[in-house]
Length: 203
Image (tube, rainbow, N blue to C red; front, side, top):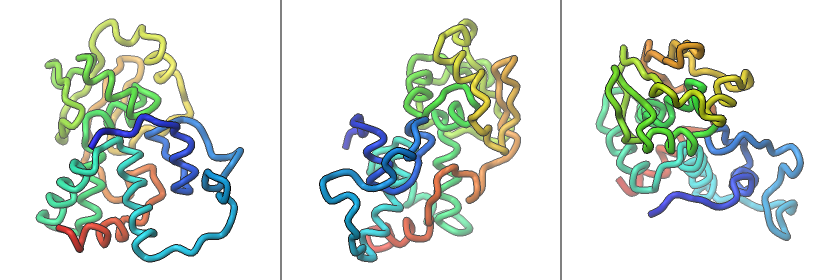
């Protein structure tokens, strides 16, 4: 299944929450679902509530349904709470790390930088967005990339909150993974238990 490429604010309105990884835009103008009956009250089934929570993670991190399902399977096999592990695995994706370090304003932009070979890990180019970073690794921008107008705007944007598990030097365009992310690391307002429940019947 391919990634969503349509209107991003429409997605946030449908899910009822802001997705900072997807877009820098806000819901202030129309904070209700899209469509003719968007402002009408709708009864929500338990399934729908779980689906919406799952969609928040899928859309914010820009992963496919298959990728998210595989990550959930891995999280379920790991020690500890599956939901917490799922957040950790999503946060450790290289495209997300580039975004959370403040080198890109959205995850789609960060993914583009990774695919174009603009990101170095330990001095070596890595062009796989799903690459999973480890504690202690150093992520840097390829020389010359910082002069790109979009990258420069991202670095100078002080409204982006840098992930607390990263040590970032924006002047040197480098970030170090000081620790692994936990269940509180995601910038998305999500009920992770409902995501676990959504997949519980199919894994």
